[in-house]
Length: 492
Image 1 (cartoon, rainbow, N blue to C red):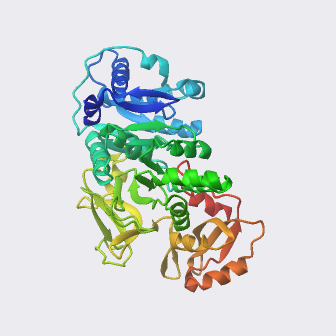
Image 2: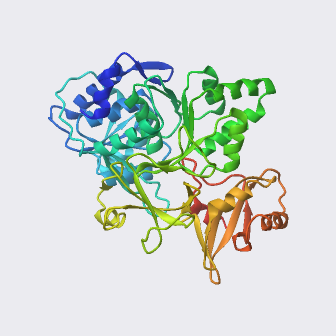
Image 3: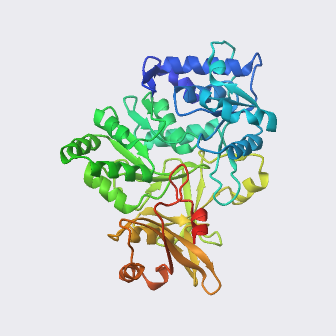
């Protein structure tokens, strides 16, 4: 039995999950996961790291399936319910999944794959039926889960984590953010990603706390749950905070006061998975008195850095390495850089993934000879805290010999009174290598680019000023709210 499941036995009478208006105890979660494990084993003694995929919305059943796969000795492969069938087919084929467990809403959607790739689509109801079986001993070094990267620069890769990796990812956050059994969190994040699976759901369940699912984001519903007073923590991506701010701005002043007071009582609110625009952080603080805690993580490492739970949280910064995480910033020659010098983050520690599934060459390239994971993210140590400058492939623009952070320009642009949102990319150019180019979501229909350029010249050096502009009603984003910059480049 894994440590996460073993610990649940200490909390049997407590509420573990709230799903579709129903409350489920840790005892019910343990029983359901044991039934699932027995049904998957079908008389075998061990699943022996068989890949079990599942397409189930965030719910009690989702958690029970994940735990059941682990209890039976399998590897959990959660699928994204927003992905089209070809994307899901790619994951199932790449993972060499034996079966895919499907919620009733998705059985018909997945059925064609039985003929195309020969996989068995198994209905959720049959896998939940009561059953008993002796369960295998699970070594912590075993593979536990495969999560697929977003594939922004190449085809998605399967990131393999062991039970020991997952335990390390959970415990470092439980300790750093002081989780307790009386905590209560709302989970509104996709459960095919480390943010929703580890940071929210698994940290709550490790601690004996309660995790409530809201499968589909709804600003009014989220605010009503905050207003109820039952939450102690809240974690979301920047676009969600943006939408919550917008909703708050539309209600009557008396209601604004009620919502603001309710939000101010939570002990911790976290933003992650994409860079948090400083204006969003400042507005959230203004209306809730909460300074959002920013952190830095990846599918491959879990969380690597975090602003302090009790100490200073500086806007635009991601704090310091979490306990158990080793980190260094290096230049292009792999030499460690000093303070205020940009470098690439490299990470070591027990939370770092085991391998890319069936991609030994990609795995080898992802690590230095002495075992550091190469993140591809550029940052700088600034007055004692680390700041993310961007991803080397999409957020660092190489123009005229300069390395320019797109995120820095975006932060400045968002301060302009006519700019609602924006994204900056580098476009290929014979003379300059790349030229700075900005896509703007305006607050009003008309936008004077000359006026914006003139204003920017007062804020930034000339080489950071965009040469190209386009206007769009919204930015292209993936399911986690990250701007898909390669898609954005095509719009120019």
